[in-house]
Amino acid sequence: MQEDAATLTHPEQPPDLTGAINRVGIRVPPFWPEKPAVWFAQLEGQFALLSITQDTTKFYYVISHLENKYAAEVEDVITNPPPTGRYRKIKAELIRRLSLSEEQRVRQLLCL
Image (cartoon, rainbow, N blue to C red; front, side, top):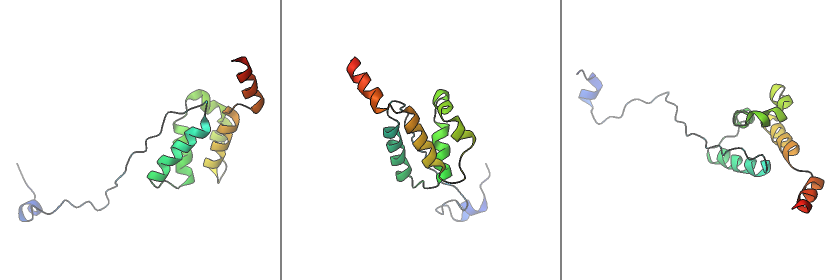
C-alpha cells in the first residue's frame, strides 16, 4: 500500500478541502394539495434553515416536488416562468388554483 509524502510527513494534517462543496440536503415535505399555503410555509422553513434565498432555486425546488397532476395545474407557469419573481408566481398560482373558494368551503361544510 502506498501512502503519499504529505501523509507520511504530517499525518495529523487534515486533507486539503479547497474547492470542496459542503451541502446539506433540504427536506422538502410531501406536497399537500388540500393546504398548499401550509406546505409553502413548511418549505419556506426549510429554505430559511438552509439560507436558500435565490428565487430560481426556490422555484425549481417547488416544481421538482410536484406530482404530475399538480404540475399540470400550473403548467403555464412551469413552461413559461416570468423572468423575475418565479417562486412568488408559482406559489401564488398553486395556492389560488388548488385552494377551495369560500363558496366551495361553505358547500363542503353543509354537506358534512
